[in-house]
Image 1: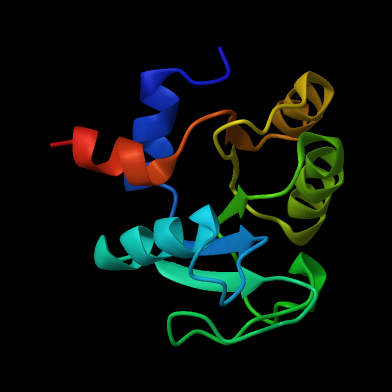
Image 2: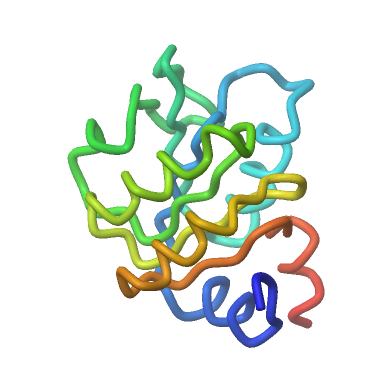
Length: 135
């Protein structure tokens, strides 16, 4: 339910190309940095969201989702599970179409709240792994 293939395909191919990557910094050792690079290579616009608001992969960063001055299609979440629910709630507030919780990030209550609000969502998956599987 949290990771069905039709939902994954829909997020990656139909819901838009602007991805806010929450937890993305300029630290090249972090998974978020590599995943954001893959998203860019596949034509997605990445928006770094991190308290430091750093520029990453040539894209200006913002300290929060609410600080982004344009529409975001997908919110990709690279924070601990105990913080992820609040990020999903912010995604609803800003009008995102989908929320993607990265590998190891889970929150069943947030999943149900986000889906009830009308957003598409997957948990515990990585778009950098899923995109190449689309063929």
